[in-house]
Length: 396
Image 1 (cartoon, helix red, strand yellow):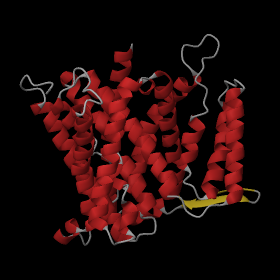
Image 2 (image 1 turned 45 degrees about the horizontal axis):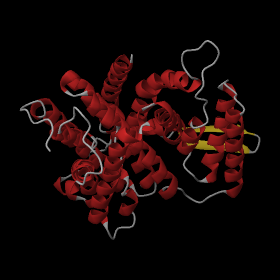
Image 3 (image 1 turned 60 degrees about the vertical axis):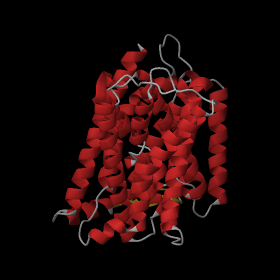
């Protein structure tokens, strides 16, 4: 049953990764052909919702980034809660190494980026961009390898990516929050208290959770904290209980229902809206820009050093163990895959450089593209052609 679920998940992720790639390519084609006028007009289309004195008016691009991506973070929250209560994150012995690796995978890329952009206050806003891992692409590459990689490696990457996503949410909450509105924050707190009361009261119907969650999203959006955090917070209160005669909990049913919509719809749409890179004016010197270098080197080299290096140190010191069935070269291969930061990196970049000017937008997207492609290609090569050779599956 569990193996079948993993196969289904990996098949979902490989198709999602393919759609993400196609959407990104389509965005770049649209931005660099005569249709770019219509592409830009589409993303700048004003969309407004007004109820009495309450109004939200944003261009379509921000509705995608602030609205639809809140659903993506809601799904992440559901996955995190399920894993903590009944999955891999519920067993400390299994989660310790991925936690340590995830810390390295977030810290080292950030240090590399900061070292290359120190002294530029606008560029320094992007320090967290190379710290993110795109779970859809990373698991998609593993799915392409089939039975060549052990289940332990898939579980390790899945757990690490979930922890990485949680870390990204914390970074967004702390470092990418603008001026705060106390009245909106108070309304958000009231909504959270109501969600808590619904959960503790044993309410299984999802309707009240969704209605209060929508209020929470609006309050958080107006508060100055990034609205996607409302999705994560709402997810934590969805009941992990089964209704009468049901085989799945309410949380699991909602997660299963949402996953295809997010993987096949929201994430490709986000990629299409954010991956359009104008190639006009790009020269050799462009590839030497500190922002581009910091992101691409941070993704490619930083994750190798962080994920593999932190894991190696923890294991060699005797604090943790290499999971059974996993080799050192496989651990290195999956460390490379952690450098695929496409979706989350684009999202963090959209927050970091909202007011950073067009030059930074081009540099960050190119950096994400090159860093992610390099990590994905080399990771595939290592796991496909090197990890399976020889008898060295565990180096003592």
